[in-house]
Length: 383
Image (cartoon, rainbow, N blue to C red; front, side):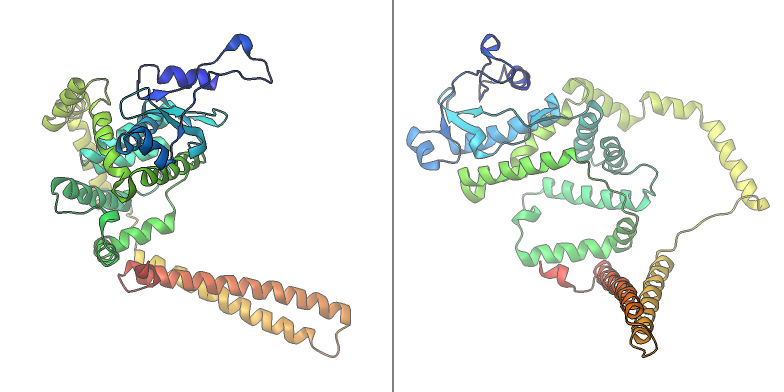
């Protein structure tokens, strides 16, 4: 059934071939499919000999997978070279998919969130991008989003500047020295926010996304096998994702109209905000009055104090466990203690020493993180 659905999804795409099923010849233990011979997609010599276009095949593979994730919501989890072949059913080569035993679905909300994320990236809308991440289940709900939105604003600004000028480079086009300089500049601007977000751990990684990233890494390897270093997954994906963002509301015209409404303030939510503005102002005035009367108290986060407290706690763990371990070891070596009791005390001492070691590692990791976010040179900058 997975193969039948997958075939139906690409029924109108002449660049993709999915074997047909023969239900009358299938049983619960036997699957009968159309015989679709082709050249292995990584057999570059055979592909060249047959006159297939490597650039066309790399682009077809990339866009077909984006189509599965973004439009169909039903994707092939294992697109390795053994499950992909090429025949002459289309000029430049037609891609054949095999083996539909590992398939997965993308929920409608996740798919919608991904489309909204792409749209907000190209429209430079950091707050909406964070909303989309929440919809996808990647950003935990209820976390303090101030630092996250600042980071998103910086990232999207960098993305827009790279798109705007051919002189700007993507990170995978930079030399190691340029990458290090880019990271240092980013940390100089966002060091406090990066530290705050890593401490809260606001991001999640849904298990289903493991299949997606694994598939894209495989596709990236196949693309580089076909076309060499000129294959760039991000550049090939860009026109497709931009088109997807334009069609997020069903048609480019509707999306353009809604975007115009957003820019000039004619959206339903903008009108509703205008109507409810007097009540909102009254609410703000009431809050200010409570502050003046002392009925409300402000809670302010101080990242420097949080770091200091975390460091003190780790030092206390380290010193306390170290002293306790040494004391227990000294007691176990005393002459008045029975041998069996001494062994028990030594086991306890070893367990406490293990806690001391973990505390030291955590303290060392915290020190490296603080140096990195304060823009000091660390091992991270040599990567």
